[in-house]
Image (tube, rainbow, N blue to C red; front, top):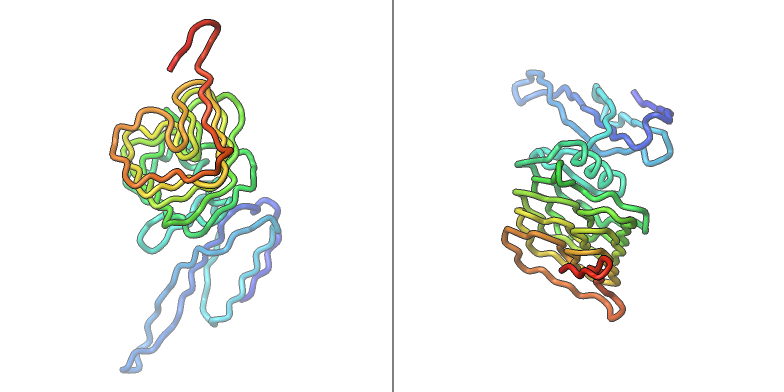
Length: 239
């Protein structure tokens, strides 16, 4: 049946549904197959329209975590799902041994960003940007371990472009990762206009403590971009 649901409590949640088909084989015997779809999102309209155009039995439901593809990869394709990733990881789900794939360019539109991973709850998985772009990253305040990723360990960040960023913090401040630590970073590009401000351990791509391999990291920013580490307290200067 076709379904039209309106519910404000479902805003931001993912919709999934299972189609169950009745088929006939070459011998005339009937059998059933099913397909799982996790595609729709309540994008602020609070309305879900389910059109059962394939004349199949269907079961549907809702979740507020992340899309999964058939291989078990987490899929991120918009601002809401990227925020969900940050919430998921910062809630204690390190994604150790799991992969996250960026499926589309995402414009953060200058909205305040909460970094993915903290020192106590780091991101331990593999984030594959698939050469997609995240743009207009903004982080303000005086916190430590700030960037698109706050703290990563024992994983990998790869094939990612970040364009235009204004990031401010205290210690371990950068555009891509405040504390990259023991995660690998490869095929990373930072471009456009970039402003990074902090007290100490401040960088354009990574902040502090990179203990794994970094390969093919490119910074291609405009002439007015800068990285500023104001490492002085009173009369004492720090590095």
